[in-house]
Amino acid sequence: MTAPPIKRRVSVTIDADLMDAIDRLSDNRSAVIEEALRLWRVHKVNEQLRQFYQSRSQTDIEFEETWADLGQQQLAETSDVERP
Image: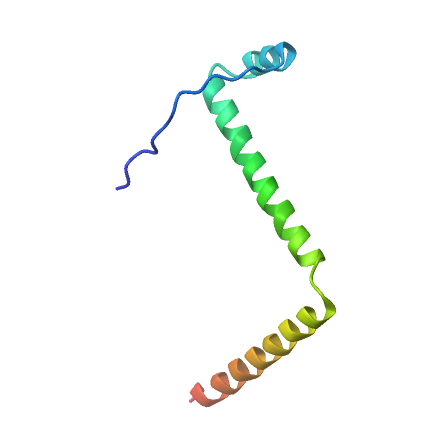
């Protein structure tokens, strides 16, 4: 069994209309804001990954394709050897 995550109390300033919408939809502001921050973090990581892959050079792409092909070939050879 894992320990519950450590939480920190923070103070933030949020648009009043947005806070009213949160209050109408939930009775737990902290949970809503925590979930929003988790989604924001996932979005940022995905954005960084997209930028990384879009900025690769053609040489890098070809190198990765070569290694992927080699891995596939080795997997196929291993699968053939292990079959009874």
